[in-house]
Amino acid sequence: MSRRRILGAFAGVAGAAAVGAAGFGSVAAASSGKGNSNGVLVPPGKRGIILYSVRDRISAAPDVSGVPYGFERVLARLAEIGYKEVEFAGYNQNTAILGRQITPVEIRKILDDNGLRANGAHTSIPSTVTPDTIAAFERTLDTAEILGMQHVGTGSDPTNSNFKADWDAAADRWNLFGEMAAARGLKLYTHNHDAAYNFLLDSGPLDELGRPTRSSGIRKLEYFFQQTEADKVFFEMDIYWAHVARHRWHTYTGPDGNPQTNIFDPLATVASRTMRFPLFHAKDGAINPNVTNGYEMVPLGEGDIDYGGFFAKMGAKGYHNPMWEQDNAPGGTADPGRSLRYAEVSYQHMAGLRG
Image (cartoon, rainbow, N blue to C red; front, side, top):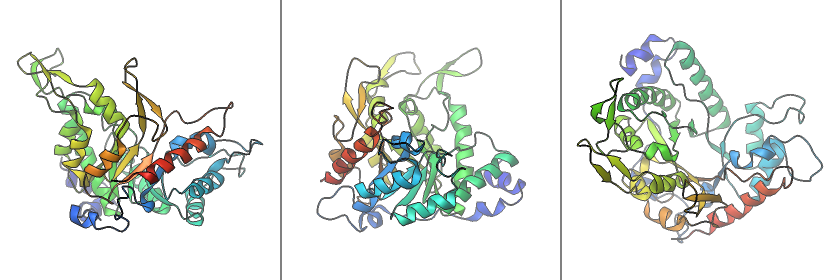
């Protein structure tokens, strides 16, 4: 069944099929944006953070540590540091702060009071298409609109499978949900981990379940680029995990059974389709050949990933929205202020990038 027939089958959703994505412009138009002069690679208004990096303080109960806790205090501190954009990783805080859960309307007021803009969220994108999942996704879009987002997405890959058929099915779903998001003026995006840049199993002898066992050499997410609509489905490259993919996923078994080598190039992947990457995770890594991933997460600017070169060469200067992320930023009870300290160190490096 086509996307339009699926949409027409569920009441209240059919209008989404006829509306195009908003804000999908040319590279030239994006490059003419304000704040692109003087070699600044990340204009002030584009400097962002995903709140997962400071999740320990968003979720913290009131305490006497002196470190901000909850949305009101943490967002105020991030604004003080200089951040202008926020990507959400959930909308809950500790109920001890208000005696109940905070609402999206209340979060929006905190954003507005601090001059912050919500520009994305790692939320749930349905893995099936039913009346219930359609309705749930509409509620996700409602929240995104309340918070004033331009993008809405997920922190997971479209599918964890290695098989072409599963990526085809994921593309059909994402084209549908991308059309629904576009009807609200939102860009739907998926966030990659390293496995998404492993090679697609799409050729060779079939296994006992009738699935291919070898690869033509195309990477899973690169196949997904081709199968999804460029004005409906967008991407948030986690630059750290893309470099991990370069380290890990460089060999595949070709259709003829012979091993092949193909080194992944994160920059080339973006530069060839730069307008499909409105968001990035700016996560740094220090090279460590003794660990599986080849890198260890560190504050932005303290690792070995060349963010200056990456942002200078990817095209559409001023279009992209990098969000600082560091999964291991929280310091626990021994160091409750660490994630916010790392947030400040990382902001200073992001602001200092020139090219």
